[in-house]
Length: 155
Image (cartoon, rainbow, N blue to C red; front, side, top):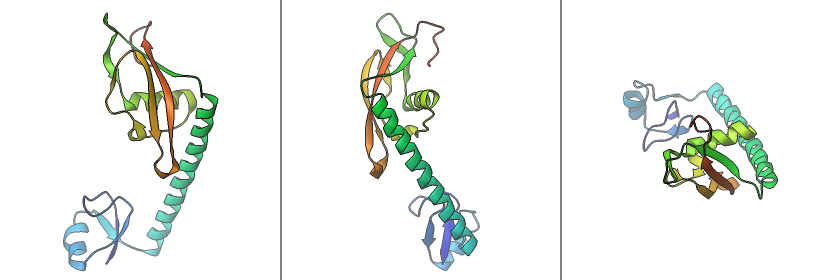
């Protein structure tokens, strides 16, 4: 039986993915829990349109990001945070902070999970951060973390 998942189901599939399952599994597990619905022509069209919009948005974001990288080739994206005497940050700079700074400064929406930061940044310095766009490629951003001279909030 063909079903469309309404949310991610571990070991089965992702949200809006069309899957083929046995009738009993669909009737006894997926449908009663609201995890899937039966495939209809309208649902297939809706999912195709949604995927096309998502791909178009990803292409636009990729083009904007490539332009952003070219314009800022030798420049740093700067973040500042409150710093202690030893030069260590109070708190840390995370993937989410970097994504927010890119959006605030350049109106480019990047999923924080696409930012290649293995652990939060806890010290002042310069960093080379990779932003991954999957099969579309990846780019490196130069990040400079400095001491906040104002109220102590991250920018």
